[in-house]
Image (cartoon, rainbow, N blue to C red; front, side, top):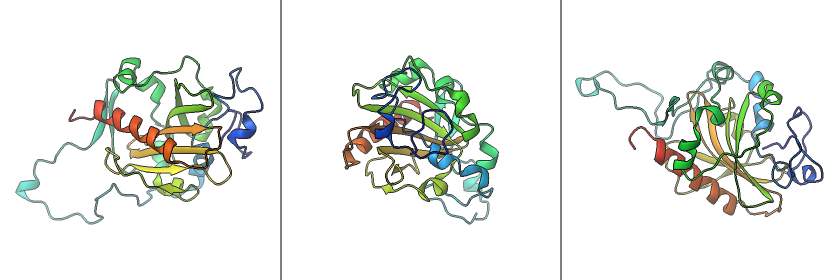
Length: 235
């Protein structure tokens, strides 16, 4: 994840370097570690539409219709008061102008049900709109860390083309995956899942230069699982 001070993300700056200055008037020990997907989201405008990305276990060929399949099971989804966020592959070009906004489409009560508290101070969204990314900062006890819920128009293929993939064994949402920041851009781990309105992820980053993503991934995994378990359609 590229760390930007919400000011245009052409420059690749690490979270540690951002820790040397103020960002939006906040202590950069918290918001200077901006672990969003800005680095890969910039690729969306140049990617081909209709990327062939499947949900875990999904096959490319459709079988013949049968009477047993007349009633399809309800698709996996996050069910928020604002509407369902259906899990599955998407076309980045179609999604980028209808991106999910976690800060306005997940209520404070829905965050609280998953053990999350929305931060009182948020990144300036207008600086991210042309990057096709939407973020929501959460409270975190670690002054050197940051936790975000992120939605962006980069799909799994785009993300993993520039970010390392991590193995996380206990992910609950179907098709979920974990990844880190591109080399040299700070310590972070995202647990993400593709949806019909972009890739939704829980992003955990640290300015401590841990050199070990397991702790960050464990926290991101726990939060994503809680969000899905509390707000899945079959909950």
